[in-house]
Length: 127
Image (cartoon, rainbow, N blue to C red; front, side, top):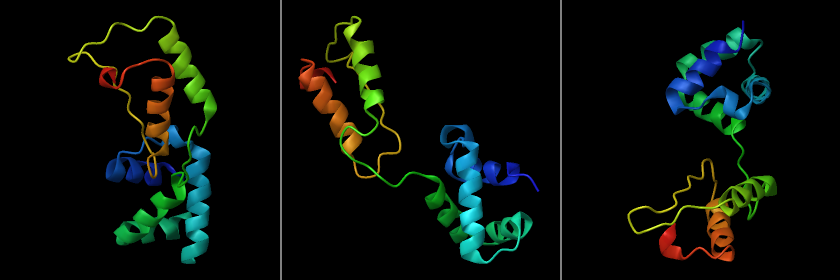
């Protein structure tokens, strides 16, 4: 059995695009879920997932990164700073810079973005 049904399930239930976390991450999580649940093969695990929404929640926890810290993945902050240094548009109250931080566990990443913007000279009301 392929991983496609599991990937589809994660996408339909949680809106998780399998490509965003990597197909290898999903396969690794499925193998871990199989081991923890005692499933003999992928088909057995798939049946378990279909019967138990709780097991699907557990699988999601195995797929996503449950770690967070300030300035995690510094290359992301370098990329954002470089983009903004190229000439950000003027911001008014109606036209603020908006940045979405996805998948932040306890919030350190969006706080890191705010600190970076302040260090770059952006006023708080601009973002």
